[in-house]
Amino acid sequence: MKLRQILTVIFCTVALLSAVNMQAARSKTQHLLVPYPGTVAGAHLARGEYRVKCETSGTIAKLTFVLHRKVIATVEGQVVNRNEHYMNNEVVYSTKSDGTRVITEIRFASPNEAVVFKD
Image 1: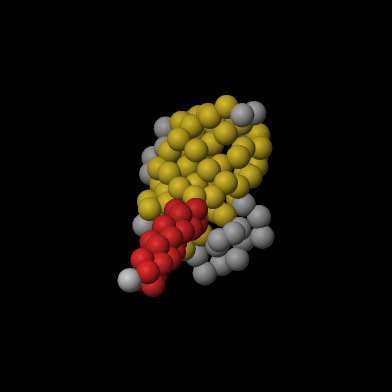
Image 2: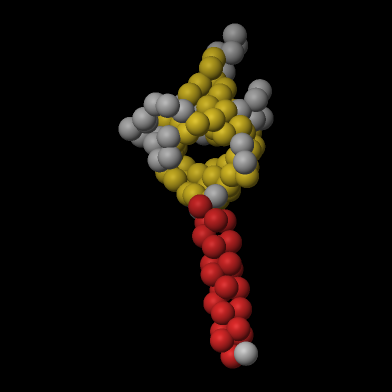
């Protein structure tokens, strides 16, 4: 009987730790240099070095941009796995006819994936 209780406690502990590790794997914070001002999913980002918290759930990513300890924007995008290896985190822009820049994609060096945004 005591062995059964011990095994139950061990199993529950392992299950709880596994759930915590899975959640931690889905949330990462990385540094990202935004070299030019632009908009991402309707939010304006000024030029600067941001901390980006990326939380993923399946193919959806929620990115929170922090500059000087202040949350500037929280946006959602589509996670796309790439067969390319990115050396650094990168920002991909498109330019509208009026000259304003729109951030269409953020590429992360680790892991090799990108988050693509809708206009």
